[in-house]
Image 1 (tube, rainbow, N blue to C red):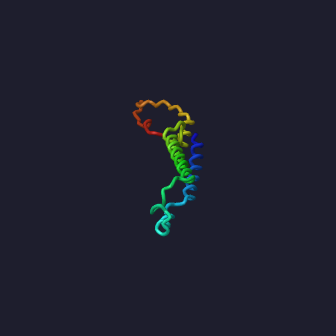
Image 2 (cartoon, rainbow, N blue to C red):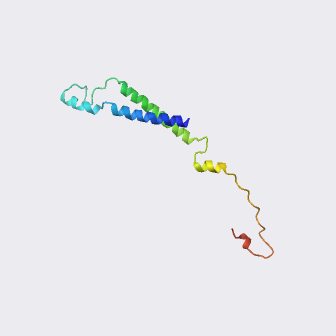
Image 3 (tube, rainbow, N blue to C red):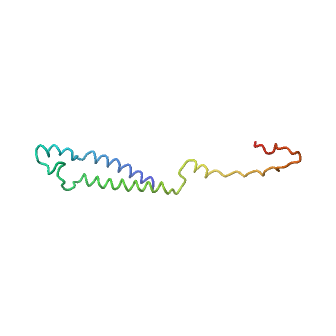
Length: 115
């Protein structure tokens, strides 16, 4: 599931960048608004949305959905995520040796020194 979300997310990001770069900006109509008077306003007429702007809106919506999906998948993991988590899960804990008696007959504290 996560791999599919990543693939869709990356493809959508590339498509979204391409669609934004191909579109005709509203700033290009500003010269026409002041010089020739063919535009409907200072920033151009606000006519109906064309194919490129609708495609950009769909790509942006898919990008947001995949972003939220990836966020949810990483916030609620079902399997260990890190290398150390996987490593620690595969290692069995060795048994601990019984402790030596604290007080022996000689009264020496050499048994308390860690080795």
